[in-house]
Length: 195
Image 1 (spheres, rainbow, N blue to C red):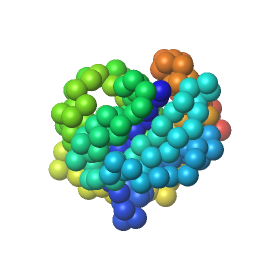
Image 2 (cartoon, helix red, strand yellow; image 1 turned 90 degrees about the vertical axis):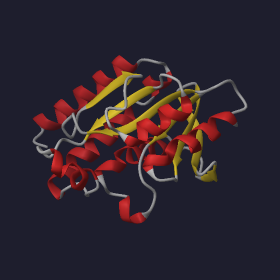
Image 3 (cartoon, rainbow, N blue to C red; image 1 turned 120 degrees about the vertical axis):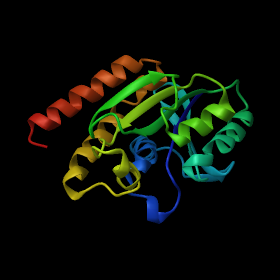
Image 4 (tube, helix red, strand yellow; image 1 turned 45 degrees about the vertical axis):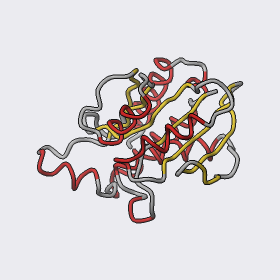
């Protein structure tokens, strides 16, 4: 079983924040791949479906970002199958908007959602690092992360989310490098088309 976890903060006030790009990515996958309707389970929102031949769950913790670890850990414990293979989608300051990198394990690098997951999951899960760009100065990071995407960023954001949803089957096959390459090519094409 494959488990896709999107990180974000619940609530309408946070829905369009850069910090919620992880939520946005898994929501787009669920929408494009016709996953079942959301159910409230384990302090989160759970959907099931398939990516290719792989049974897949999508989970969004409905705790604050900083406290997502216990909710994800509880959901994993309840899986009837063996411990699911997990891919976590999260925002990444060190990548510009429109870029995505896959990573296995590694440090939280100050990301409180990842820190909470690592404290409760204790495994080197796969990570889809979704660029939101850096504001240029450390004092501006909090406002940047907890701010909405600007109007001129939204088209590039939508292109990224569409590319992720279009190629998500590769995650089910464990082909993270191919997945990342497909996203890169899709975004290069979008840029050449004048995005």
